[in-house]
Amino acid sequence: MNIINIADWGLNMGKRPYIISGPCSAETENQVIQTALELAKQPICMLRAGIWKPRTRPNAFEGVGEPGLPWLKLAGRTTGLPVCVEVASPEHVELALKYGIDTLWIGARSTANPFTVQAIADALRGVDIPVFIKNPVNPDLQLWLGAIERLYNAGIHKIAAIHRGFSVYGQHKYRNFPQWEIPIELRRLLPNIEILCDPSHIGGKRESLQEIAQFALNLDFDGLMIESHINPDAAWSDMAQQITPEKLGQILLELTKPEASTSDPIFLNKLENLRRNIDLLDFQVLDLLAKRMDLVKEIGAFKKENNITILQIERWAEIFKSRMALSNSLKIDSTFIEALINAIHQESIRQQTKIMNEKMTGLKKK
Ligand code: PEP
Ligand code: MN
Image (cartoon, rainbow, N blue to C red; front, side):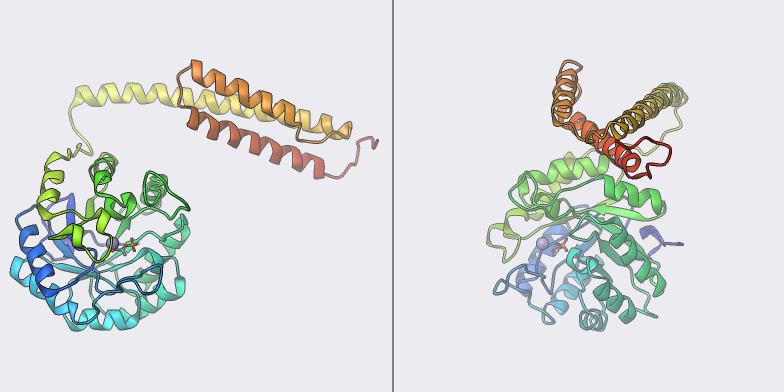
C-alpha cells in the first residue's frame, strides 16, 4: 500500500508529533470558536469536533449535526488550522464535503462495522481528502486493517490510524484498554502508516492523559488527538476526559519526545552489543521451550498408552504455584509470568490433545 504521509497531505501541519485537539462535541458556535482561539495559542496542527456523536444509550446528546459544520469551518479559517470531523455514514460524508471540512475521521464503532466502512469508502470514491481511521472498539486488528484497505481501495491514500483503545466490561484503570501490542502489530504489517494516539478515549479521565500520551511518544507514535473544551466541566459529552486548551499546553510542555534514531557511534555500538546478547538469550529460551514441548509430547503419548486424562489438576496447581514463587524470588513481574505459564500450559494441552486424538494404530488399546 502506498499510503501518503501526513507531511504530504498539503495541509501545512508542521512536524511530528502531530497534535490534534478540540472538543469531543461541537455544542454552540461560541464554544467552538472560543475553544479554537485558545487552542491556536498552543502548538497544535489541527482542530477536531464531533458533529454527530455515536452515543451508547439513546436520549444522550447526539451532536448538533449540520449546523455545527460552519462553526468548525469558521474556527478553522479564523485560526488558520485545518479541521476534522467524524463521519459515520454517506450522508455525513456528503455534508462534511459540502462545508469544505479538511479531513475526516472514522470512529471506533464505525470501524467495527464493515458495512459502514464500505458505505463511507464508496461515498468518498473520487474525492481527495485525508481520513483518520480509529481502531475498532473490539481488539481485532483484522477489522482495523480491513477498514484501512476499504478506504485505500476506494482511492483514499491519505490515511493515518488513530489508536483509542479497546472496550472492556467493568471498571478499570482506563476507560478503554490500550493493548499497545495491537497498534505495534499494525505498524509491523503496514510500516508506512502513521499512527496517532488518542489518550482522551483510552484514559477516560483528565488525570490519565499525561501518562498515556508519554507512553505513546515513548513508542514513537506520530502524534496525539486530545479532547479539549473551553469549559470542560460543562461539556455535553465526555466531560471527565476533556481539558482546557491551557491545560493541554501544559501537558504538551511536559512531554518528552525521545528520538526514533541516532547516528552516535558510541550509542549504536553499545546498543548493538546489548541486542546481540538479547538475540542469544532468545535463541536459548526458544530452544528450551522446544525441548520442553518434546517432553510434553512424550508425556502425552505415555498418558494415552495408559488411558490417563491430559489434565491432572493437582500437577497443574503445583506447577502454577512453584513457578509463581520462582518469579517472585527472581523479581520478574508476576502478571507477566502468569500469562507466560498459562500460555505454555495451554499449548501443552493442545499438543497432548492432538496426540490423544491420533488414531490408536500401532498402540496397544487398554
Ligand atoms: C470521539 O473522538 O469523540 C469519539 C467518539 O471517539 P471514538 O470513536 O474513539 O469513541
Ligand atoms: Mn469524545
